[in-house]
Image (cartoon, rainbow, N blue to C red; front, side):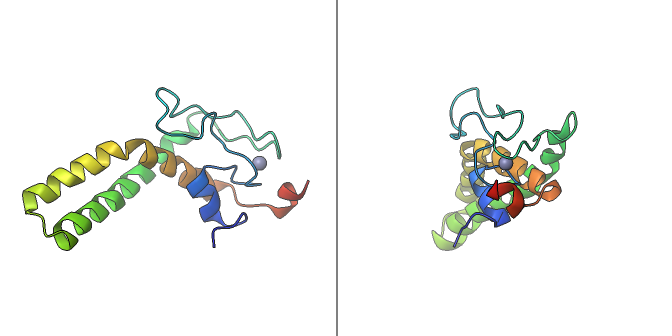
Length: 127
Ligand SMILES: [Zn+2]
């Protein structure tokens, strides 16, 4: 279902948005302490420069609001609607979810952001 060539593949795996052949990040695990923002300068395969311009990834902050809200809604639906938790418990679970998934939310936002500007190029992946 999730194949190379699909934008979702790059977004969910953090791979190069152009060739999908390697990770943009120095360390794939977003929970590795201190290396959440460490990215490669450019793709070693297709030479795409990830940081298109200085402070390019500041824009990802706007995306992170939307991604954060999506996680909050999911936490609310699961705790309040599915598990029938009280409204207080539901809000606590939202806060815990946002804290626990913050590294994931930040990376997803960057991946979505860069995928808005750079699309998959089968040419780049083939070479
Ligand atoms: Zn690449």
